[in-house]
Amino acid sequence: MPATPAPRLRADVSGLPRYVPGRAAPSDRVDKLSSNENPYPPLPSVVAVLREELERVNRYPDPAGRQLVTRLSEALAVPPEHIVPGTGSLGVTRDLLRAAAGEGDEVVFAWRSFEAYPQLTWANGSTSVQVPLRDERHDLEAMADAVTDRTRMIIVCNPNNPTGTAVRRDELERFLDRVPGHVLVVLDEAYREFVDDPGVPDGIDLYRGRPNVAVLRTFSKAYGLARLRVGYAVAHPPVATALRACAVPFGVSGLAQAAARASLEAEPELMERVGTLVSERARITGALRTAGWTVPDSRANFVWLRLGPRSRAFADACEAEGVMVRPFGDEGVRITVGTPEANDRLLKIVGDRHG
Ligand SMILES: *Cc1c(COP(=O)(O)O)cnc(C)c1O
Image 1 (cartoon, rainbow, N blue to C red):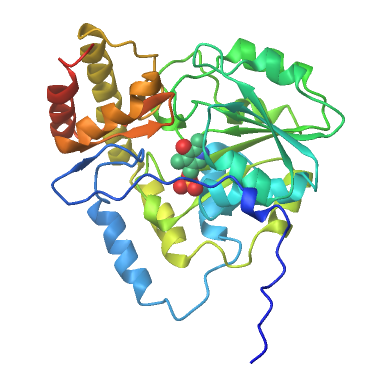
Image 2: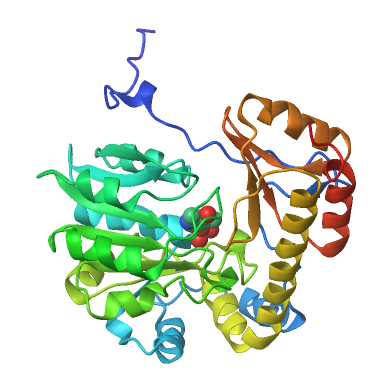
């Protein structure tokens, strides 16, 4: 048989930045504080809706997610045409890139920030422009300075993953005033529900008066539906319309739509859990600081330790004692807030290990 040639791929495919996921937990006895997941299982009311929905999986889902959009539209006081659900906010980010940035166009974001940004930008054929954090925070001045003729999108991750730091209303407004109106600014608010500082703006408020601002939200973190893959964008019509045009038809499954709706119905119960995680975040931060660690103020469901080259060893030591945390290169370690019991185990390991 003649040798079959390999399919032709993009010439730069071998150099692509990869999304490095957190490792799977080696056993159920390990506390997985490495992927920013919600530690609580779905509410019985959500499971009941999912059971019912299982009986219908022979049918395609509503491609527009109309019921979910209607419910969100009421909750956020935003017109339904401005809401576009997608396969997690990651899926929506990819579609936004498709809609806004072409081959060689520039996408500006902070670094270090969410690991998916470089990979999604690359896969879109666009160029990442990474603006270093300053004291673990977005340097919005430098990000505005990084805008060129080729800039099509700027992503502001607020609060930032993995440092947990949040930008404040005045600095974000000053930044938005500086960015040209033809550049799309995406506020990734995956952790919005964990923000307890009134000085951190709600992206939905900022989007209202600004046609070039889009907001991303997700059901993966506070609502505990990470495995179902559902999030959404809030954006003004030209952007929202383009976003719908770029989405994979029927991308958001019926199960995901139903669970998201049920979670909105159960919001008070879910926000109680979020409240617990927020107070646990304060407890962990306080205990770590008392033990001598430097911990930036986090507004998300995780805390960040800048350990530099010690990051990997620190994560390995935690794992040997049954708690998985997430090292990022030679920069630092991100620790997700878990149940109070898991956090106790974490603090037992690291509460007295500073040095
Ligand atoms: C977890 C996370 C998301 C992802 O969410 P999905 O909705 O699960 O795709 C998006 N942005 C940031 C910054 C995240 O940390």
